Length: 119
Image 1 (cartoon, rainbow, N blue to C red):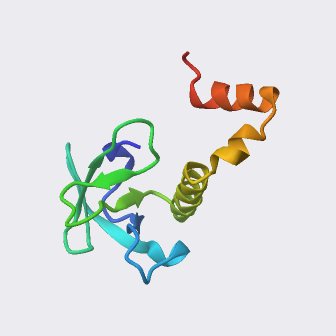
Image 2: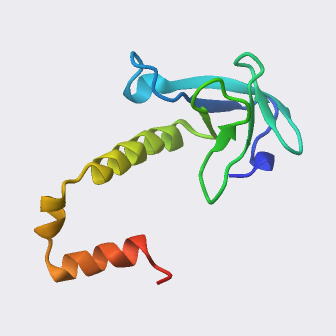
């Protein structure tokens, strides 16, 4: 995601980090882009600013978060996909070793190719 993909006046979608009460798509808030600069995109949610994130992420990261940074998306669907991605990452991270040991050699090789494509 690049800063120049955003246009002043267009809607964008803010995905807040978890705050206990907000789960799933309740974490998504529609905002309006106020300013697009060289370094930041500013939205109408208290003038919050977002900058490019590292990697090929489909979002911009909040520049000066108070707690966990929020993420800014061009579309609602991208924000929903990110919620699903976060859930899958959490599920995979919490997989017990017994589940890994139950995988066949072919399954483990496939997982290795996906997680470590350059090795």
